[in-house]
Picture 1 (tube, rainbow, N blue to C red):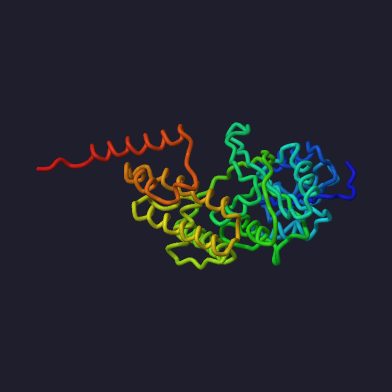
Picture 2: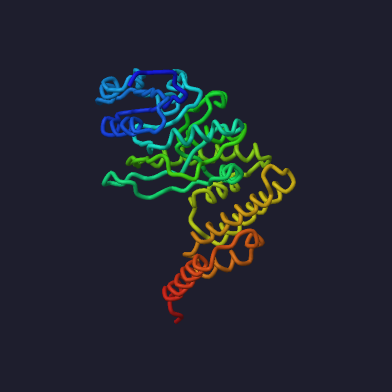
Length: 346
């Protein structure tokens, strides 16, 4: 197919991606929308990645090469600098775009001039090459912005090139997408479509202890910036608690639950004073996050149930009957096991 005036530039970073690059490019050939170009950035690969991109039988595909491996952020920035489209769609070489992705995301951006970036739910490609689990994303603009306080709530994104934050993608040890999406969201409206439009292969990774610590500190730094934009200065303990709300990263204890409750109540009060987010939406989401944290603390037995029930956060969100029954059963069964494990008194 001949190159033409593209509305979308698909930026595809690729590092030693010979095993997956063909599938990623083939998924673009099946798109329902055809006014796009593809910029494949070969980030210093030592395999056949560049050869596959260079010989791909579609003149809309262009290859840009880094002479050495520079990382995801620099590869994307290089691809965006080469882009001719008004919209930038990110699709890494280990991902695939479902056929309607570009059409639906372009339509959403065209329909709403205030929308800066749009994502979707994300499917996981299983070991058999089929679509497996679906990672659900929030679909309202308000909920997406609120969730960004705790985690990256966007995936498979397409955005206006004019909405690029200063510096573009930043080279970080972790959270490159989270940092970028959060900075775009700070400038205006973002959301996800209630559709699954992108699929990802989970790449094997065995980071060292030092890499894990570096990544964790990086994630907390991104959250600190988010909270400062919100108008809240967090202590180191509060940052750790906020990170736990977003990813359940800490071992559950009663003290941790109490710290989470205090932190979420502090955020509720801050939003009531600052009015950064619609208050009913904000409280409802924090009530939901409170339940999820307590649910993950079910190994504490009845204590997790007691702390959850006694919190004023309970009034903001409550699970349905079946979900609540599962939570209660889990806590009670764990409580019985804890009693069984207690040593007998002499």
